[in-house]
Image 1: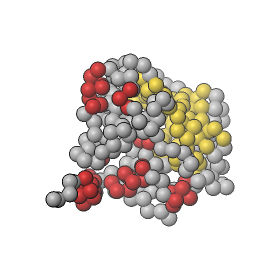
Image 2: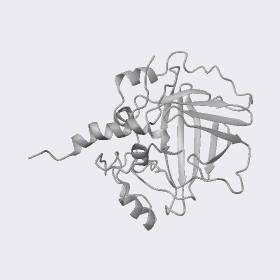
Image 3: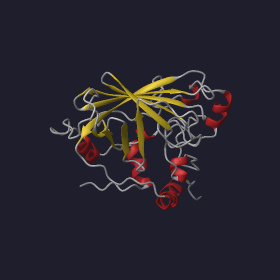
Image 4: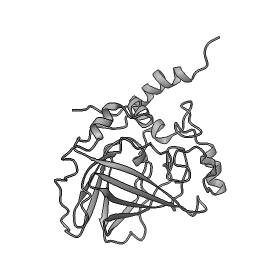
Length: 268
């Protein structure tokens, strides 16, 4: 069994490059496309099971389909205040990639990555379906979400890391509508900010028996002049999720022992 206990070393390097071991583990096995969970609602598509990033997929750094790899993040349709805040970001990915004095809230403080960014890490997630609730359990940082089905949003939702989510089925697709975010997370790996008006719509469907298509649409009228969206694909797997907890002491150790020595100027 794999041991993917989270450390900053693993999180950063695994995000940048998938190892052959990870490829082998996440590839759909012959029995992986057959879930042993059946939604109680027979009308609902069966999306249950464990899902991993598609081994042949290229990791994305933004949800903007016009710039998925974050090569031109400055061209995102940001409001002036959001553009100014983005310029202050020192992300470990994308065009402004740096490990020196990074202010990435995940890397620096072990903050949860948030609903939009968590899918960008090369870790698994599990979907559990019931008639009234759908649960998504994420391997990375061990966070989970509950999506109330066929309900309305709270009139005054609390502002949280993962937001207030409601869901419905649209044919073969699970549609998740989320509001009520705090402003502490980045939208993506390149440091794009968001406001408390962030509205995210996720659409999950089986593109084929062993492949999950995730489409994410981002709308934030306070921070962006228009909405944008992108897609990412995952594969069914029977490999169990491991422990991938963000630990500040490990991050601090990695910063001092790996990042600082490699980013410091050579002694003359």
